[in-house]
Each structure stands twice: as structure tokens, then as C-alpha cells.
Amino acid sequence: MRLLPLSVVAALGCFSGREPAGPADQRCGVPLTDDVPGSTLSAIVGFAFQPAELRVPVGQRITWVNCEDNGAPHTSTADAGEWNSALLQPGDGFTRNFPEPGTFTYFCEVHPFMTGRVVVE
Ligand SMILES: [Cu+2]
Image 1 (cartoon, rainbow, N blue to C red):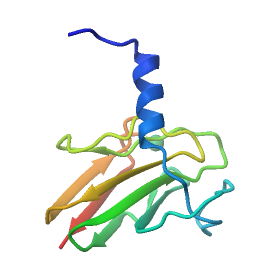
Image 2 (cartoon, rainbow, N blue to C red):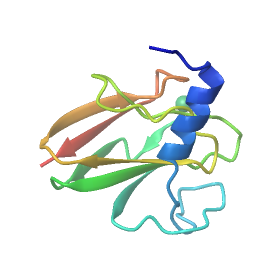
Image 3 (cartoon, rainbow, N blue to C red):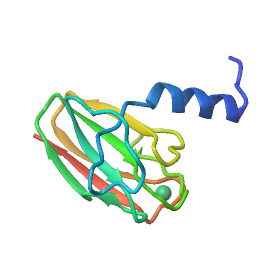
């Protein structure tokens, strides 16, 4: 198996994870151009996931959007490895579907003090 340079992996991850983001969500400090149809929005702003806990029904999609106006990159990375957004620059988004019930905790790889929880029920 061939390993790609980290920059290529990051770029691919960013591209595949990018989703149109929602209009001017009040929590976002960056302009968002499009909607996030069918997704629950988790704003990453002020070095925190907002809200820190999301409760969604089985089958719901969640889109994390880096809403920082301070240039800080972030990730949404599951503690148990179910997902990893790769590096999200301000304005970037990452969407994951949650087809199974459960409680999922996650953090930001850049700032491990940033944590959040998804409860799928
Ligand atoms: Cu972060």
C-alpha cells in the first residue's frame, strides 16, 4: 500500500468532507454561502463546539462548520475513530450521517480541550 503525502491526504479529506454551509447562522463569524439541507448544524466557534451536545434522531446528518473569524483551523474527530473531518479551515464544513443509535464523543485534534457529544436516539 502506498502512502500519500500528508498534504495530499489533507486536501482530499477537505474536498470530500466539504459541504455547502448554512446561511448566516448567528453562531458563525464567517460568511456562509449556501444552506445545509437535511443536516443539523454544529458550529465551531470560540474554540468550542456549539452546542457541545447534539441530540438527533437515527439517520440524521450533522454538519460541522468552522465558523471562526480568527483563522483557527479545527477538526471534528471521534474519540473511538468513527469519523475524522481532517483539518477544517474557517468556512469549511464536514458532514456525517448517523444511521445507528448511540452516544458518540469527539474532540478537535488541534485543540484537544475542545470536546463534544452526539446522542443519536
Ligand atoms: Cu480546534
